[in-house]
Image (cartoon, rainbow, N blue to C red; front, side):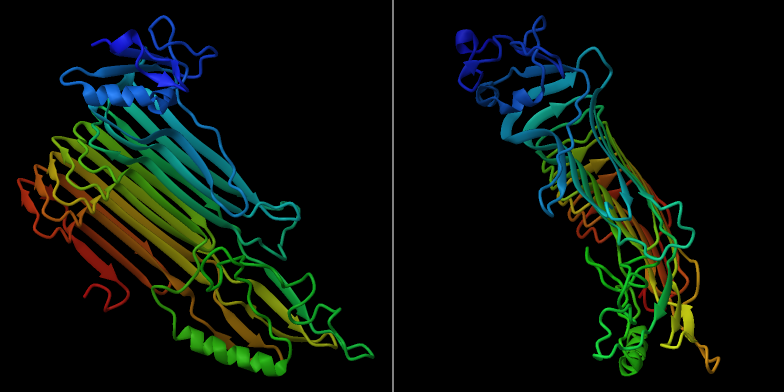
Length: 495
């Protein structure tokens, strides 16, 4: 079907598209053409920027527009202003609805690659970069498009660069990582035959432990000792958030409060005893938090012959929280065959700072290891919160592993009396794995699901593996699944 006037589609008031039902794009070409095979456009984004093309697709009664795309699509990294996250978006559908009449497919290749990659390095020192906040999206906000043989690949990679010259670090920076990765967001009534969606993160920001020395200085003649590095001052023992971390969640420092005098010291010891009674599932700090999705908010989508992988490998000395799902918050979706794999491995390996305290005469009065926490949460779901869906032939595997390793044991030793007091390590390890979760009133048939969960922690751990969980009113038939289980060091956890 030819468009009226051989050029209904327009960008900025100019005829930019085509009298043909086939549009051609050579992504990244130096010259931008009219969309013909001999003179292709140089960006797929122009398709979604065009007002006339949306209008034409909605007017078609039986025909469709096919967009052939050559080359790879890779957006630039745009740094966030002030404290806002940076954002990387490959394709913005701008809320358009093509009524199922727009077909995007590769040209000169077996698949159309949409890559969103981000590598970062965190470090300490005066010119340090101690945090990374990033939002990564493949395609978002469009309806009624057939994406055939499209490969959306989101990858986030991060490392910590330590000071190699300092064998025993006095101060470890307070490292923070926040990531939000969604391959397809808000793609309603779209289809994905032969398409592959991958969200993958690999982060290693283990820092080891700190070594601190606290020295109480004598007051000067004016009685003012503020110029001296007392129990909490100076350049030593004043670091933020190293080792296994403290109990303050969020982006703020979690440095310990060092008492300024003996009365405050006694108060601090009493507070530590009170805090010890509060250790539980929500205790401990998290300095890496990643949300990962294949499909999110894709209502009415047809996932037949599509595949999605969610893969996370995170290592830190404080705490990590991975929330991954192949499909989430997508009501009334359908499929005749769909593959979903989710795998998360979290390693929290840390310890408390080793410290020594001296009085004003330079005599050692106390030594020990400061209290700390190890916190890990890995929650994976194949298809979650997608009610009223028709799901046939789903192959789903989810594996969540959370391991917390303590480098040392928190304690304090009174060097005068020799009395030693040990403390419990805070935090917890929680691993959860689900295949179908909260898919109310869904029809699930011929599905094969496997879920595994493993959690390790010195004190508190829990692991849940349930192929089917909270699917109220769902009709499940002809399906197989691994055995459900729940295990924990907490006797009340699985009740």
